[in-house]
Length: 432
Ligand code: IMP
Image (cartoon, rainbow, N blue to C red; front, side, top):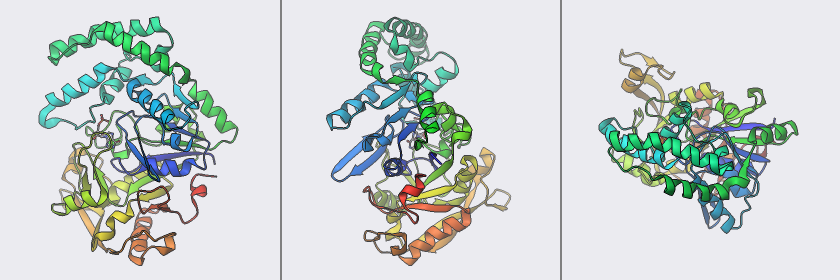
């Protein structure tokens, strides 16, 4: 069973990068299938810390890495990462970037920034990396794609056509500075020269690998509740992190996907705006943020913390077809005496439901109904296997499994690479 999708089951920042890094050692290829540098993964290897935004996390393990057609690519960010990995001694000759992926251009970033400002109180709280405007241009059929960098004449022409329209918007609607054609064209020709060798037919590459029995990981960015279709719209990203999109965003048949691993934190966090039923009140909010080090990798923003929400997780299991879960950052809960877990929502009419509300206004008004589990109040540092966990910590994990009817096959107990427990072994989670 060689193709595994790893998908965020909450609002992002579940620690997917670390899980991908772990499973990558037993895999042959790691692919990203959507999103762009709005993602941010931190991987700690001994004294080295890697912060990755564009490249798949498999790069740290030296695995072939694919940036699929469903991604949006900021050349400055990607080239910066390629340069840095090369400098730190990691080869990049097996990085493959789909020619069909779209380029995030400087005007996308500018428009993301000014449109968020204009929205004022209604702002989405985006990462301001140009993600939404880039996907919008893709849908409008105005985008510039990675393959356009292969021919300097075409690239210049496309920039010229796009700028003729974008500058009008920037100046007349957003009342901000336009871009100068020569400056952008020269800069992009430099980027193009650096990136050309990496452009590939990634659909063919991944399909051939799967046919040859290779183990391929599909690394979702952002998460289920930020999905454009299935998330808490409009407070979502502009792509589809859900597992089914792995097939579209890489260009393989959907029957090639064998398994879906959902990654969830042992509590919940959210950055940006939007409803958040299990939000922890102060002063515990600040305490949780500090215990978990909950600050955005990309933006440095404070993440809001909430108690574990099984209603939302049940929904993530449904819309992704998750067949096993990784529960990360269990150690962060070690200091707490009591652990509320939300297993149902109370709706406006007083009824209770264990299923995620289908309509936005029901979700906005939903109140969490908690079951309070006892904490374990001891560090998990010395736990080398699931059996070493304190009884209350094991009970917490078992409660999640029982209520969701889904096995937890990985448990995170610390930031370092080796601090993950697995009842059946990591290789089996990777499908090896
Ligand atoms: P955008 O993806 O920059 O357009 O932002 C849209 C929403 O997705 C905002 O609420 C962001 O905070 C959120 N978001 C985007 N990427 C991530 C991520 O990697 N982790 C957590 N939230 C994210």
